Amino acid sequence: MDYSYNRFKVRSNETFVTVVGRKCDMVGIEQEPGIAVWRQISQALHQDISAGGYKPGEKIPTEAMLSERFGVNRHTVRRAISTLVEQGLLRVEQGRGTFVAEDVVEFVVGERTRFTELLAAQKRTPGTQLIRAMEIPAGELVAENLKLRAGTKVYLIERLGEADSRPISIGTHYFPSRRVPGLIAAFEKRRSITKALADIGVSDYTRLSTRVRSRRATAEETQLLKISPATPVLETLSINCDTNGKRIEFGVSRFASNRVELRFDT
Image 1 (cartoon, rainbow, N blue to C red):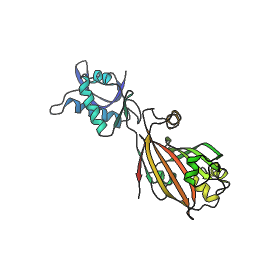
Image 2: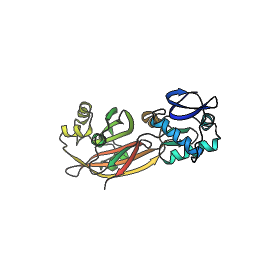
Image 3: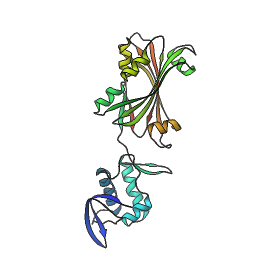
Image 4: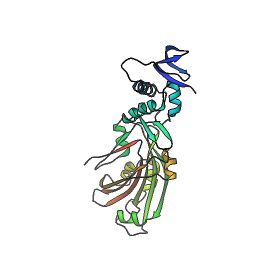
């Protein structure tokens, strides 16, 4: 198996050479005086990641393969990997292996939580894919949070949120149909809840409450978010009100925990 190296001394036929920016076979390392072997291996892997040899979310070779590459025992490789995990460059999934940590989006939950604005402020490109939009009778959870009777008609809009073309969230939003007539048509045109609400007369809305928990992802969520079954999701339940204090939206969002960090701005 080939690996990519970036300015790292390697052994080839017992002669130490420097390989720069090209593919080469499994090799050992030159033990530099005063630097522990595990630290040199950690530095080499760090260089591989920085040079793009391993992409965010990509699985790196197994301990056995790295042991063969560097000509050391697995304990030494394990210590090198542990250091990179502590630094946040790698993450370990039990039973699946070790992966390059992904770039984390900071999602700020505050009085006005706006998906597009939050990502744009971090110089990221927001994206939205509509999963489904329909009118349904409110179940007990939705009715309770919107202060409606169970069975009252509500609009459901579910969408996949992306940052730089990476899926980071699934948002399921419920709106009282009588309070926001024409919302689905407006959203299909604008692809933004904030803009769609403005088009039908809801000029502003603010966050009343947010609850958050961590749980195991469902099969559908792992597929949509492109995460492993072992990666939990961060689930938020939120309520938004219009300028008159009326509950205008109840939302359930699921965030990929390996790509999103929630921060509450109180």
